[in-house]
Length: 368
Ligand SMILES: O=C(CO)[C@@H](O)[C@H](O)[C@H](O)[C@H](O)COP(=O)(O)O
Image (tube, rainbow, N blue to C red; front, side, top):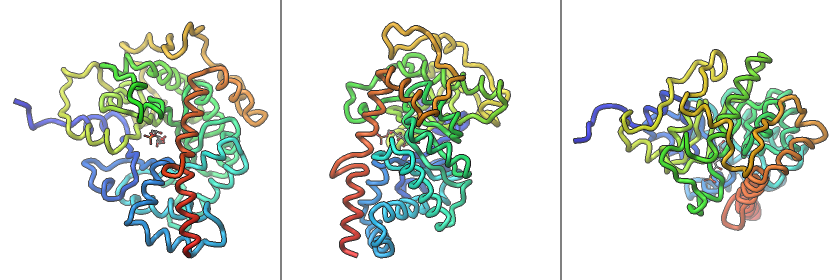
């Protein structure tokens, strides 16, 4: 008979890394079985909240206040106020993303992040309780460089390979979010590599391990802080467990996968591998890659005939508006295609993402 004692997968995972909630509904967040660290989001998730009946009055009020400043002012203020509803239910930061439609425009990205900063300050949320998600393109990471100098915390997102991760370190990101699965796999499961032992068999694990090993090395060699790896885009509970074993600092997990993790009883004999209890700091005195995963970093199942060469940490990926990063992304079909798809999905259409939110805010302004 199944034991009622012992932790759930979710409780076990929280012992090994920081669990974050990738969902903004305040009712959900405050009723979670564990207190999450960060509350992340993206344009799809903000758009869902914006359309909830429970936020209709807040939207109309915000539109009234800011009707002369345009839709982005309304969007930014209400997104911050929707995050504020969760701030007491989490122990860490709330995260909002700059516009995906401006992912190749440095100045527009700087301006939008500064606007978030202003709105967070107005809402009484300090720089230690929020973080701005920025798409990891060459021009947008140049925006991060400016924002880092101003003390605005950032997360480089939609990271699909080592060059983007190194560029995020050079720009001064606090976090990065590599996507374990490509965005399209969430709606087309034929694109999902649903393997038995994700840490070892998921084709993206080698890239994750290379990023973590590179940050550990850079931390040791330079003494400089490196971004913490917050893995995103999971499709199953076992993938989230794999994030801990691979050595990620945190995992941002959708309400669906969090629900699965909370239902499963943890039994080590059924796990292919196991993470270690979370260290005080991910890179200071960090342990090695687990022995059973060590060979992975020499492979790249996502690249046919991979030459085994690691992206160099001495290249300045940010110079000339991020020209070297753009070159590196263009030469890696996986990173290039997945980044293009992520942008397309976040920009969205009449029903989803930035485009739908813009329409909703413009309608609210018209009625104000
Ligand atoms: O990157 C973060 C958090 O930093 C996530 O919100 C990330 O956008 C998502 O996990 C992925 O994009 C997958 O989300 P979705 O396409 O299912 O909404």
